Picture 1 (cartoon, rainbow over the protein chains, first blue to last red):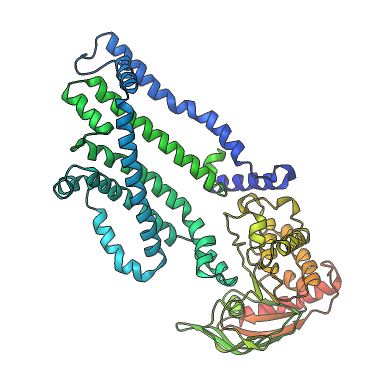
Picture 2: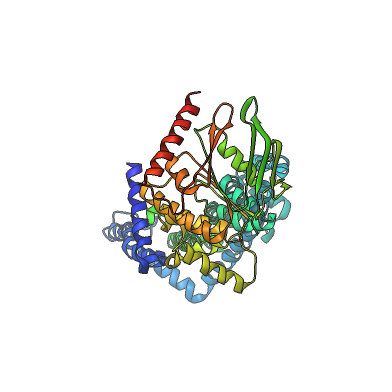
Length: 288
Length: 245
């Protein structure tokens, strides 16, 4: 089964390569087609849920004090957007998230590369990171609040901490999993260490690193919510907290919706980045 | 410039296994030598020694009279798998080991593309190539920096019979044009006769040279000629003999 799939893929690749005019990479075209073909399918379920939710609310099946209608949620969202309160909170959240993610992911990339490339650093540092990794970052919130108070610092540290490990682990594993045979090609051409890293190690580890980045963005998003629910005076989490205090279910749901939509958009962005950067891969999933 | 290669009483052990023992061989500048033998006869080990990828040998291995201490751009290597970098296109893979100005690069690339008949695939990625095309790109990569020596470890072993014949003819063509010293490892007797000036037959356990046979035929060689059949029989006898002893 597996073999026949691979053979078919190879034959397809050969046919593609044999036809002179189609030898140019066909990836962008195909991905656009697959986007058109696949995207609407993925949206069927969310739309259906909203429709059912609306019907249940209108027919009185759900308690209106515990659950708002989708219309009310959208209204709450639009209202806060018009007063500017939403954008203020959104900006605060986005800033924390991006700054925290950038710090954590950069450290993960650098330290993951160091432990991936050097045995000595691996022996020196990896145990520590593996131990720290198992600490649930939510458990750090009280400690950070005691240490740093309620300002921006504890939030950004928490988000960085959460974003660090997926990137660190993926970079380390990506570098370690590189085909020794390709490293040998570098030796045959007497490449410098710098060129070996640039031409062989980093491109080889890139798929793994990007996967780590995608994971890290998600975990950082989660850390953001946790940080903002534990003492903040701005941000989407704070907005949600307010909604809870004033028993505004519509605001709580609107905030959740924002979290979901932004999370999805970011994931789409990283996938796009992956397709652009990893166009060289023989992606079977893309062809089927 | 073309250089010769020499092995003097070369041996190699892995732990307690003797992979190669007492191998001495002189390869002349510009000569095409094929090492043939059953698996375990140390032919690939010797090639890795010539490439400088393995330096733990007893005895002496020299290139142009100089002891080999490590890999060098002067000795191009082609492996059984193409080992192209999947993230680079054909052009970048071909010129991977080439140092020179932009203009020199461009000129050399054009030359290699036409030599390998890959002009149309200059922008293709390795996964878009057939096995034969990928291996042609790998040979071009090894030849691009104008090496003195071309070392090949079963380069056509993974290809189907028809592609293999095509590749052998292409290789002879390229070798005659580039005038490099060539050493190729194979277990295919026909391949040895088509390519070699001299065929070195090896036997296993421990890996030693059993005999060396001169191939006295003009290039390109006719696979269906009588002389070809005679040589095939001769080699086959040696081969079977070395296998059983």
